[in-house]
Structure formats: structure tokens, C-alpha cells
Length: 311
Image (cartoon, rainbow, N blue to C red; front, side):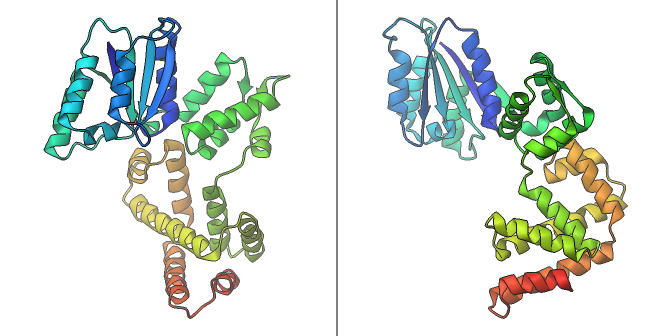
């Protein structure tokens, strides 16, 4: 039997690897188990029984970390099935991470790992720009450089990126040419973009833009308490990057520290250099006090936020 363990922070990456495994097999029956709902007995039964149509099985286990909560006896049964070289089925165990801090969990993981090939697939290790170029090139589409940059920055996960690419490909099916204007028109920007805009509007004292953006947040049903928390987080990020930038920190270090793409790290550094540290500190202090006053019942959240933008 052939076995794989996939560790990933985005299931879309696992799906791509699973598809390549499936394509290498001869018309497999694909069966998926989720260990939030199923148990190890179901899996062992599945991989040790022959398909009705005599096809090999591709058995996928989601939330594989839960296997390590099973008894050692059950793990040994799974090991016996995984070690059977006469079995033509394929087992894929998927999870974001495997908790092996405790000795008994490490022992169980070691048993499973002994008969498995490992794949560690992380979104932060891949280039969205390269993924976009390769995907569209394979599909016969052209895309401008500004559209690539916009799409890579807007898409916060591979799942979102793939969905955004499908939208663009459908819209541009006739001429197969994707531009930045099309990305701007068709692709919804994540809330972080709106927070970025409203933070810049605050620092530029652009009250009109602040209230236009505030209206958009209200239409998205985002309440004032949550918006204040987002603003606090964004100003704290600006403060941290500003301090780091003064020490000549590199773009790749910013990407690693904040867990963002290199392209996003570039803009974070660029923004930090264009903002006054004193202004950022003043906003942090104001928002921290506003947050405290709201939580202690002294200020109405909606009124407090509007007064903040008007000051």
C-alpha cells in the first residue's frame, strides 16, 4: 500500500497534490473521511476491503491529527494495513499540523510516518505571482503585470486565488486578455484593503473619505466595536513596521515576521516610510482610550467612532 502525509496551511494545496496522485492511478475510487465525524475503524475497514468494481481506492483522511488520539492498538491495526505491500489502495492523511508534543502522540505519529511519504505544503512558501502566470499560461490567457500584482495582493489564500482566477477567465473567455481594470472591476477586495484605505485617510485627515469608507463598512454589517479593533490592529502594525524600518530591516524579514507575502511586505515598508511615527502613536493612544471608554460604558461605539473621524 502507498501512503502519504500532507501537512498544509491551505487545503487547496493538498487538493492539487491529491489530484496529481489520483491522475497517476488507474481509475481510482476516491473516498474521503473527516475524523471530526468518522473514526479510525471506518478508515481501516475501507483500506483493507476490495472495491466492488475492483478499482484501486484513493482514501483521503481529513483532520489527520485526530488519528493520534486513537488508542495504540488501533494505530497498530492501521499500521498493519499501511505496511501491506500487496494492497493496491492509496492512503492520504491531511492536516495543517500534527501535535506530537506528548510522548504517546509522537510514538503514534512515528508509526504512521514510517510507512508514508511526507509533503509539507505551505502557502507562505509559494509565489502567488508565479502561480497566476503558470495557470493562465497553461489556459492560453494573457495578463498584464499590474493585474498580476493586484490579484496576488487581493487573494489572501490559494482557495481565494483560484476562485478569483476562475471569475476572470470566465469574464475574459473571448479575447483571453486580463487587465488591471478587470481585476479592479470583478474581484472583491478583502476587508484588510478597506482598513488600509481608512487608516491612510485618517493619517491624511481626509474626513470625507473616512465617512465614505465608514458607510461601506456599515453596509457590510461590520459594527463599530469590531472596526475599532481592526483600526487598532492596523495602527499597531504600522507602528511596528515603522520601528523596524528605522533599523533597515529587509523586505523578506517583514514577510516572515508578519506572515505575509513578499509583495505585501514591500507595501508595508513603503507605507511605514511615508507616515509620521508621532501621528501613528497619537492614533494608537486615541483608539486605545476610545476602546476602553466604550467597554466601560462611557461612550457609545457609533458616536465615539464618528467623533474620532471628525477630530
